[in-house]
Length: 344
Ligand SMILES: NC(=O)c1ccc[n+]([C@@H]2O[C@H](COP(=O)([O-])OP(=O)(O)OC[C@H]3O[C@@H](n4cnc5c(N)ncnc54)[C@H](OP(=O)(O)O)[C@@H]3O)[C@@H](O)[C@H]2O)c1
Figure (cartoon, rainbow, N blue to C red):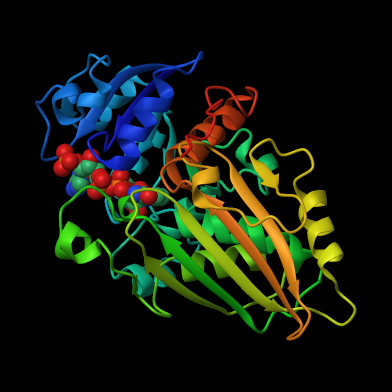
């Protein structure tokens, strides 16, 4: 399978190159960038020095001639301008940005402050939360790869809301991300001396991943929900830890909560429900495509608590995108993703 990557000079794109260079069914035939076009990829990323390709400016006809599948790992507002031309030329697309995740254009405008694709194309895009929408992903020609925070949050939350173990009207998600979640472009918010030994909440109640999570809970349960979602920036490079709080329904115990997680992911290779009482940590999944989960019950307050961890660049971006490629092509879901976590 010939594969091209647009945005290969960014963190998500570089992680795609790292994973796909060892994928047994894939050859990387082109990598495209923007401001860094013209350089060898190894000059941009010395850790990829054994990948002998040059970063090129993107052109849809060129990409269609050289690739069967194109991954787009570009900032919000870019991929919707290039994907229609690729689809017209019969190229399958997996988009790591938010451009195709929301079904309503107006919702995208409201939360991203930008334009995106026509609603017919948004309807054609399959939301690639692989563990929950496998049937739709198989055979799709356009996959919207989920956001990093939604991946951790939804994998933890969906089993509980689907099984009706918690009330829908009081769900709080408190999530922390490493700084690579903000991408490679330098900025004050990700400056070492501002991030190091600092802990910051940001975009309280206005983060663009909120409608994505609410839309997906509705898609699974048929019920409208409102989530309180508070992201935090933590001084580490990779990793997301999401703690989800919800009022448990009467009679629900930790055993019921954990059983719902275990049942939902019994045959899912990348979701690991930890033994009772074990709290997942970001380093348990670092560099891997795993999401580690556990559920707890705070008997004093009647709250269900789920802790979910992922590596934002792997399960939260490039790894899940490769998982989606595998499923689109009918290959084993785990192909090219046998990545043991790096510890410590
Ligand atoms: N970082 C994460 O943990 C994470 C997780 C999940 C999803 N995502 C999403 O994935 C996408 C990429 O994120 P990232 O962290 O990899 O960002 P990044 O490090 O900032 O990389 C952005 C890439 O897009 C290219 N680019 C920028 N503007 C462009 C334009 N107008 N046209 C074409 N290419 C353009 C850049 O090329 P040059 O370097 O050559 O200028 C670079 O290759 C974003 O939408 C992000 O929200 C990121």
